[in-house]
Length: 484
Image (cartoon, rainbow, N blue to C red; front, top):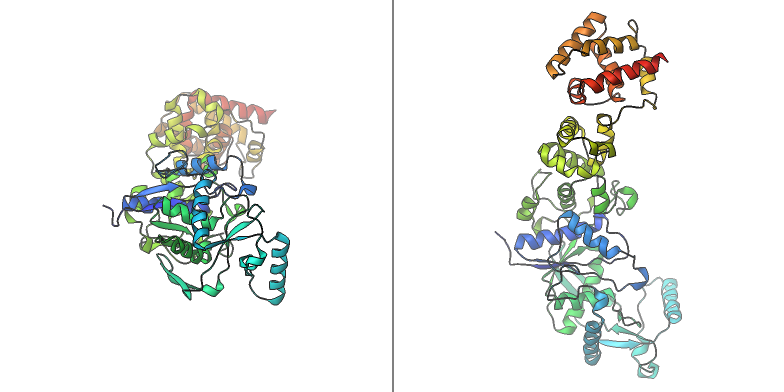
């Protein structure tokens, strides 16, 4: 049962690039809190930075959420009574609310050119102080026509002396009012800044909790003051710890493994593995448990268990989680999940044959994209183009009888086998004794000849799946190649 009143939360990414796993972690935490409380998860696209928009980024954001299994309840695809959910489609809403604050004096027009503002920033830098706008345009003698290009700035009030809030993750935080600058609320092109749009939207969409990256902590006092200027109550803020690279020293980047969810799924990572791993980046339930089902995460997730310290992205740990889930998955389910990952030639073979091959490699699979490399010999004769056969034949462990002689003897011995695992093991161990060679030496020769690989699943199990006809043909082909 939900442990809190139903929450309305929002995930509000900007479509200025692909949504990597560090970013979507925020979306997952919002989704978990909504599900834990029996609330609503909203996707809002903050596309007001028009110069940095990336084509298809909105589709990629939606696809990533759906692929991870955390599709929103409301959003551009789903609709909802609080839409539109693209900020670029809400410009009239922002203008009407800006007009209200203009009338109250909380916003004022600013006609300052970029050149003047740059000069102020340079002067502040030389003086070693933080830049703050000097309110030049508040003075009536500096006013220009309302038709001239201008922005709308928010006038930071003189009181209260400090702006504080009780952050659900970081505890009580305060900023001095003197540290805040009259920020731009509405740009000259009519588009709002993040500060203004997110406050208006959070109120109109009835957002109860804002779970977002802690890089927005310094901006929160501005947002609280905007809420107060409108006469609205601000939501509960929960600022999430950053996700850092494996060295724990810098923000996660693509070279550290910061791919999109879609890219990971294309590589054969399971959505439930990604969800369990991402949930652990900055949250734990106080136990040593490392892998959770979505249902367990929903039940256990609370804001109090979100950590303050940065989380470290560890691709090896994600791969371990993924491999463990693959190994524990029922074979029939794994066959269904792996449909898109088989080598092309596999599609001409029966499902039953593929199931047998999959059973042999399930313990070795770390992610599904490894399937072709691990199973290709089940569907295509080895080409031996990598020199593995020659290298094995010339290994110092082969004396008398020679490598090719061992292959020929094995072929003769297997002609009348029923190819059961028990008989294959018994006959081949007896053959090794008859040839006076170590079993491992004989088995290695047969393995390379029949699979083209030095490492493969258990030899007897592999031979059984390949079957008599294929095994005899490959043993003969390998012997013929070496004899030539």
